[in-house]
Image 1: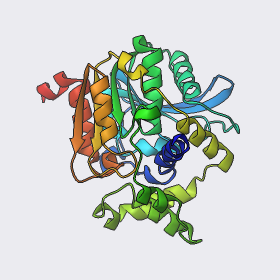
Image 2 (image 1 turned 90 degrees about the vertical axis):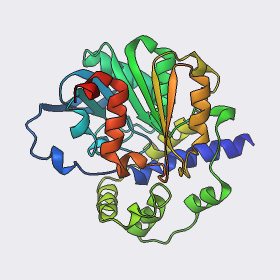
Image 3 (image 1 turned 180 degrees about the vertical axis):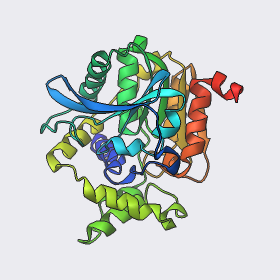
Image 4 (image 1 turned 180 degrees about the horizontal axis):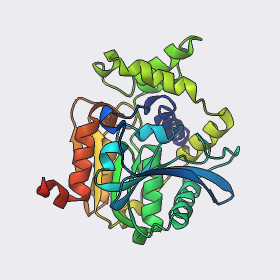
Amino acid sequence: MRRNLKISLIAGVCIFLFAACSPFSDSGRGSTMTKSSGKINVNGVSIFYQMMGTGEDLILISGLGMETWAWEKHVPFFAKNFRTIVFDNRGVGQSDKPTGPYSISLFADDLLALMDSLKITKAHILGISMGGFIALEFAINHPERINKLVLLSTSGGGADHVPMSQEVLAAIFAPTGENPREIIRSKLALAFSPQFMQTPEIEHLIDLRLKTPQPRAAFMAQAGAGATFDRATEVSRITNPTLIMAATGDLIVPAENSRILAQKIKNSQLKLYQGFGHQFLIEIAEQFVADVTAFLAPQIVRQH
């Protein structure tokens, strides 16, 4: 039973190796909005980050295998109201990629050190899937550094985690041929709706994934961190205002996980999207950003 849980958790975050990439929307291209990027040494590794916009700080945390471009479709919108920070976790992108082992608590320590280096005292924290694990860990250990918390397509891990079906698990690990594009396409199909899989954006997502492969050792170190995450009991200690978001068609991290989190985190609200999958935030990017903004800064919505 415990072994099956670990496999399911690994599989649940493994889809991120393929699924969460997208380009800047047209509304962000050519923007004169303030942008900056760089690398900061934290906890013995170099972490790459990008910042855009002004206002309250909002930090977006990616899942396994994902880089800063995972948020490129959303950052231009968020940056209209927040100073938005994205970064590459250790093991991926332009950050250092030690062989490991890693842990979710280590990722959370990296986040804390990054905030200290950027002189960010307090921020809104948003994390998806394994990034949600990191956000939960950070909220448990450093609630004073968080303003509001947003959790997407994630769980508290441990015995409470509702695993994917055996059919989906088999599909993730099933042989898919030697054509890299088709391998990625088959994984994307588990994270997106059938309608979205027919759009031209899918080909661009595949191009981005092929352009920036992650070293296998670093990938496995990240996956191992997700597989051992267990804060099923401690999440009830979180008191920061929390928005939990999920899609009813999520085959990777079933929406029941979000319902469990909402029951345990008292100062929380749950928003479910109908007819979408694990990566709903990419399919409905503008609606997603609007919903998050309404939670983080309702006064902004009232002004408009």
